[in-house]
Image 1 (cartoon, rainbow, N blue to C red):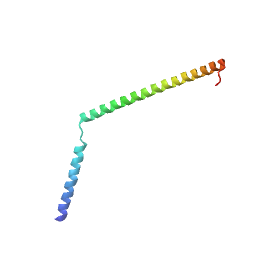
Image 2: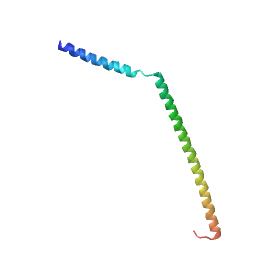
Image 3: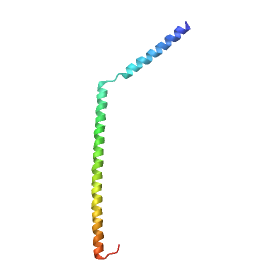
Image 4: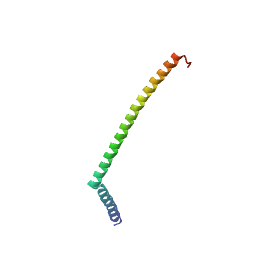
Length: 85
């Protein structure tokens, strides 16, 4: 008798766990749609940030080239004017 009661309690516990797992596994399609939309928006923002970073890097590279050219020009002018370095 004791064994049967113990088995019944174990069965009831496993049944409760199974029911909980099934209920927890059921999700609303609306919630899934909302989450998907949020993920898409995050991906769009991340891509925009990457594009901005790439644009800033291009601008920085251009500025470096301009500064290098101006530095070279100033060195040449200083050399022509006889100004020591």
